Image (cartoon, rainbow, N blue to C red; front, side):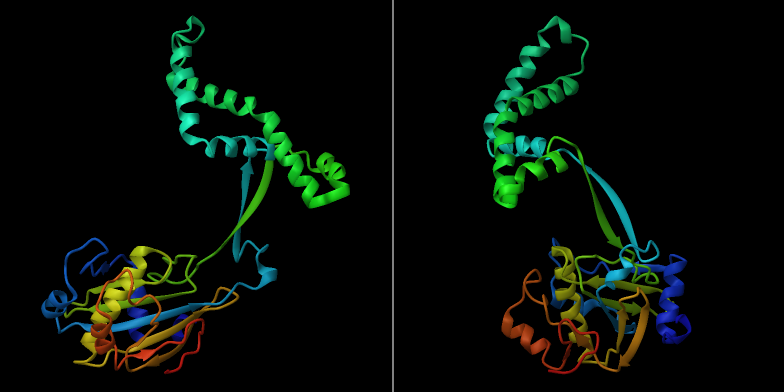
Length: 294
């Protein structure tokens, strides 16, 4: 599929693979650089373009296939121990005072004179959990009775709420070519903003909705590219990371298209100013790999 990518995308991937790609770093969530200042000073000789990647859900029957997803074994404490910890979480201030008081008492005990304070603290915390086990057991029992009703004792014996638990977490593999491979699994889409200077160096940032920084980047660079596109058209390249983990090039548009979700919010801008800047930008329909103008 690599051969089907547009030449500029092939070049970006090649540069990224050899670590010859840089971040724009024109602004950040905590920066005081204004959009207007950056727009005024940015190198207009650069070749700007954007890439939009939409991620389809992985096919259900591929989650157990290690070629498509990683299966992680997670070890958890027993249900009763978890309930005991929850008891103290709900009484955090009291818990901390009790821990400090008992740690100080044990530090003066000759039996613990050679024991590290961290180990003493761990012992105190464990002892406090054990002290509330009768309460924790009753709470777990109530949950079983509510969930399983007349059969709760059968499930109690079978599942053993005193036994440490093992669960499995599944993590999808993101095997897109660099720089698209830095994918945040909280996103169903990401938009990338690229620039190539006259020396042949590439710069980029990525935006999405998965974190505050991503939302800021999407808003800042989306508006910046919209301003730049008013002077010279900025093309947009569309890709899909499909349900079988294939990174597929869909098409190129010769104008700037943006996902309008989270363009404002973390990146603060007056709404009327934003609407003016974005008035000629094509909107990407949310949740779609195929796009259309609204």
